[in-house]
Amino acid sequence: MRRRPVSCRIAPLALAIAALAASGHAAAVGFAEAWKAAQRADPQYRAARADLEANRFAIPIARSQLLPQVGVSVADSRVNGTRESTAGGLPSTPLDYTSRSRSLSVRMPLLNMEALARLRGGQAQVAYAEAAFQVRGKDLVTRMGKAYFELLYALDAVSLAQSAVDTYTEAVAFATRRFEGGEGTRTEVGEAEARLDIAAAQLIEARDAVEVARRTLQVISGLDAQGLRPPAGVLPVAPLAPAALEPWLARVEAGSPEVAARRLLVASARQEVERARSGHYPRVDAVAAISQLENDTINTLNTRIRQNSIGLQINIPIYSGGYVDATTDQALTAVRKAEEELDAELNAQRIELRRQYLAAGSALARVDALAKAVRSSEIALEGTRFGLRAGLRTNLDVLDATRQLFQARRDLQQARYGWLLALLQLRAVAGEPLDDIVADLDRMLQAAR
Image 1 (tube, rainbow, N blue to C red):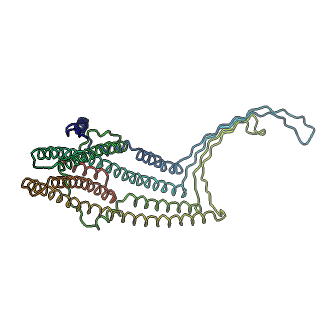
Image 2: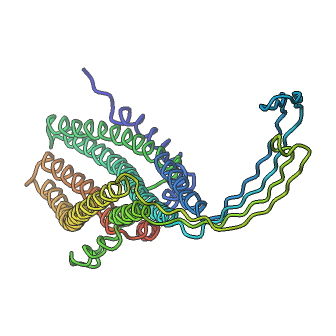
Image 3: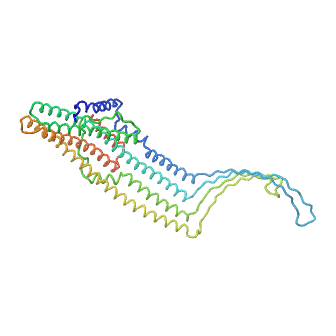
């Protein structure tokens, strides 16, 4: 069976790659732009924002119990009946009148320890909701960063795969000329064509990966990202600052949103203790009322009464069947539970930070090792080509050296994006401001463009 010419087999792929490149004329999507878009578009983050807004109403709800309570009462009643004397001898009198009442009352809490505890608990609840929202933000920036870097790597893989196709196309042509000139063998031509077919298949796979990665980023950020292109230059990779682990551990203890959220849960639980204990405390209210009554009873028919009152109302709890003591003990148990969960969360975040710290260090070492591997592979390929011209190496040796070089380049690009993601996750776990992390990574990517 006769094989189609190389140009015929590669032409459809070349046209597809050209179409892919032509679609990139839209404005490039920067890392900072993708982050801002993700904050607006991601459903999980929007739900977390709505939950935060709902929790913020806990403060005005609790404060309302410390503010004046004003009420108006209006009542009109139609009364029908008879009035009879129980002593006898007096005729019955029919009743047919309207009873009216109007009142305005004001109650102002002067001493209400339960309401004060509820207010402080509401403030702790809002602070916890804000910390929980920061946790959702950390999750979002990690998901968005992973999707963004995976798309950049997929685009780099397409570029490398296209370079491999071009290189193996030349290798097929070279092996064909050698065979036609009597220097090579038909086996060499077949080997070169096999590498070309594999590279063409990898190119198709790489393009599919681009579409999947682009769709993943689009779901998170809402951006099409058609204009996104990988950095043309070398991504700057630098050692961690600070280099030691201890400063990072100090950061996670002070800045981790998960730890902050747990601390606020402890504070909220302690306010519940105070609220429960307030059942023993008296409550003092200032009360005032203005009322007008007309035909209030049968004894005040055809009488209108107006009265104003102002005074203090004191409620002193004496005994509630042990309810206050029981709820207080229950709240104290909840405090101990919250404190234990805080310790567990702190330990978990310390372990997570160590993991990310080691991952960032390993990624940095991997980048350095693969950069050396790329340089060594380039030297090895050049030497193998020279050996082929000198008759000391075969065309298969050149093909093997070429494959090793492209593999090393792919691994190096993947390692560089892996280091960026590890750096992002490390700083996020440490509790650094997310906007600062994004801005720094965006500058690093822009510097390589």
